Image (cartoon, rainbow, N blue to C red):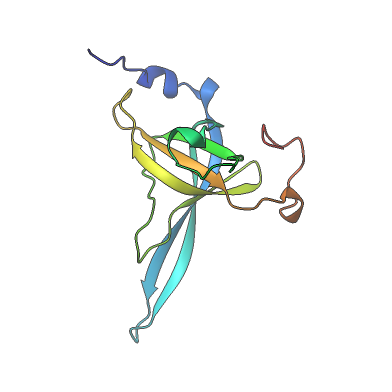
Length: 134
């Protein structure tokens, strides 16, 4: 069964939201010292509330909240043992990428699932009406 290509819909600016992708990079100084840095890049894509229970196994009685799903053309990384996972700042709140994969319904897209990194929005200065999770 062939999958339907919806790239034209995802490339429509009517569906886009903007976020900042924070990527960890390692810079080496002239004397050979490595230092971890963060690089922020503005990205756009389709951002919507995610369903973490569909991908992340949680223990009995655990409640998943504050998830996001992002579909974008920008490459997103879940991290390795040496490099931290990418993070996304959306509506003033930081989210950590927990799973990223190629999205099968449009060539060149990545789908990422994100978990809210800060549970208390008052610590971030975000408005309560800043998004659908506020």
